[in-house]
Amino acid sequence: MKRIGIPRGLYYYKYYPFAKIFLTELGAEVVLSPETNKEILDIGSKYCIDDACLPVKVYHGHVYFLKDKVDYVLIPRFTSISAKEYICPKFGGLPEMVRYSIPMNSPIIDIEINLYKNKFNLYKSLFSLGNMLGANPIQIKKAINKAFKTHYVYKKDLLNGNLPAVLIENKKPVKIKTKSIVGIVSHPYLLYDSFINMNLLKKLSGRCIKYITPEMIDSQIIDNLCNELEKRIFWSSSKELIGSALYMMNINRIEGILLLTSFACGIDSLSLELIIRIANKIYNKPIMMLTLDEHTGEANFNTRLEAFMDLVERRQNLDNNLSPYGRGIYCSERNIR
Ligand code: SF4
Image (cartoon, rainbow, N blue to C red; front, side):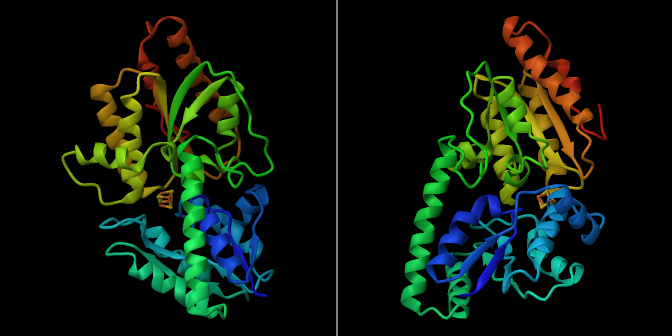
């Protein structure tokens, strides 16, 4: 039985259930790296190139953990995850970045995921992986069908706001008596990695603040809202962030929006700027940007988050009389306007 390592980072948060079912159906054993911790972050930062974003550095740390403990490490080359759209180029270069940064004996499986034109390329890649594992075409087709079914259930769970076990592993889901609801606009690998985001979701829940994330918004709604923009957005993650923010701005019960980003994220430098410009014109509730990097001191992060939560609560208690220009707390660790 082949042991295949899956690093718990980046698109693990989108596609792990698919990958796990596909591989186990074909007789492989899946080995997952542990939840992100300080050691993984430090190793990742050591081996990754300096100017990469935080999630890519953390991903390197996860690969380092798996290296030499498994027969292969699965690092797909994501080029496109939606028709006529691309994703962040760092995903496309990830197998090479890892290969040339981390000395390792376990070979990398770098199948390409490219849905830009059609699904043919995806099937081709899955069949080549299945062949590599010694499966025949009928077994591979069965595994693909089962993996897709699991993927749709996973997406539906997210849409309904039930964070599936894969995202809340080792943590009990908390039932909270909701006082307010806020939107969080971010990539899943920042949102659901509680080490990277310094327990953001738990901190919100601790103040009885419920949250809505991009995964909880129907992709058709996101598409429709983005179609109303002057220019077509051709980056999938940008579209997800901007469409989600537009949706959140239009929902009355959402009392404020948090933009959670990573230092050195090229995609967010454009997407979040556009969100802020739109918010300046049409949104009169608190909105704040928090930038994460590899520094693990929580004090600054907590101060800003608490300021945001105070503002949301006070505006609610005082019938929204307070100025949202606590929005002056557009802020980040490095950049306070
Ligand atoms: S979208 Fe941003 S955070 Fe995500 S991998 Fe690309 S640069 Fe990094």
